[in-house]
Image 1 (cartoon, rainbow, N blue to C red):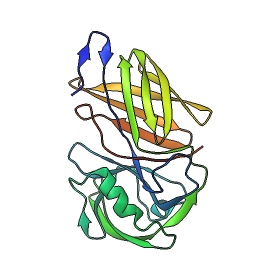
Image 2: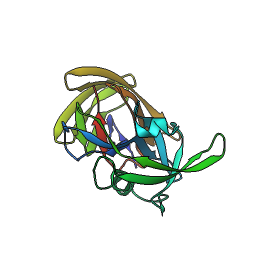
Image 3: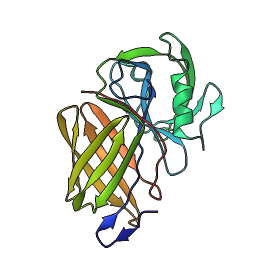
Length: 211
């Protein structure tokens, strides 16, 4: 649980996932289907981003869709590391993955067979993401690691000044009712991210932040 003690607010955050790649920074290439996922408050695997021109985009997968199963294995309640490993599979170009996908807004479910591809080469950062918020959302900083690289980002009036691979981005930070959890969202390079703390902690993996 996040506790505000004086001017100290703690958030250990690990973030959004993409079904591909190795757990290290500066990955040479990413192999997968091109979905970025998170776990919603109901412990369902939810798509938050789709890589352009990827198998997922061509199959019509959209942000907000739920991935109910991967190769027949239900994802509900599974950790994001586990679902990521299922989606990534053997890491070979041309291998197939079977995905049960559901769109809540239209109540449309379907089973998709997608072939993994090499999605790109120029990942700025990739790997386990662990951040700590020092101070407050109005005045402080985020410090920690993404993959094997250290980050130290200033926070001011709910905005995070993020620098990745020499590129600067601004992320939005907000407290979620009843004020215990934090959500950080925006774009790092061309990659949408949304990191949310449930009770202060995430477990997961940040894959392929692209230029």
